[in-house]
Image (cartoon, rainbow, N blue to C red; front, side, top):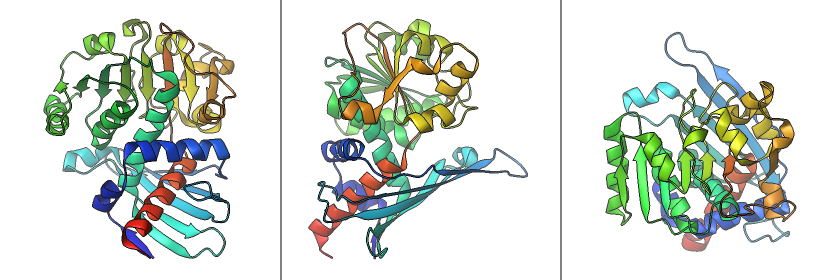
Length: 325
């Protein structure tokens, strides 16, 4: 069994391949049982979340049906980790042979999650963001923020990136890392002003209160919501949902777990039918993405085991091609 480190994941992947692998997985379909979602109470501080996400497929990264894989990701989300300078999300990914069950690789789950999460957002942006989108705002300065900036920049002609975070110093750190990689990035204090000018707003936070307010969204904006992965969490307000054509990564996941979708539906603000469709429908051409330059679109992601499996297969097969069995 091959062990694949965070540095090896970064060295093996690029955004076009990652996004294409996720797109292919949604098009051809993968078996993904409902993920196990457990709350781990703590005697002090915020509770942690334990996620078990299995999936399997009869295809490899290139769609070859002569191969198949199984995989499971074990993830923890611990909101208090920031206080001790550790990422909130931790995990590992176990990839197995689809026929024999033989373990093939143990992949750093934290890095895999960052790549596949930002990759899914960029995939949605391919269908939903304006083709001329050039101004990106990233809300949050955690480990995901730089990945979101890079992923969106790979599918749209982004020329300006603004980073906002409640801790301004953390926003400055992310912006500096992006500048070092050649991006035009700055940290901003005024979140609402940055959103009002943005073509794409990507939120990857652990917020339980809305950060994106609908009254600030300009015509043609695309909103990408990643952080609110439980019904109690929220990154956008009701007006944002009302004004937008709304899409999700998977209907089953988002309608059950995504607070940005669950809360307004439960409150009667919008009907369930307000959610137009998911990445299965978009990638297969069953539903249409952006239909006009001026419409506001919104994508809500809660994560899917399908995305993890697609990323795991891609990483493993690239590792075999680069280093051999």
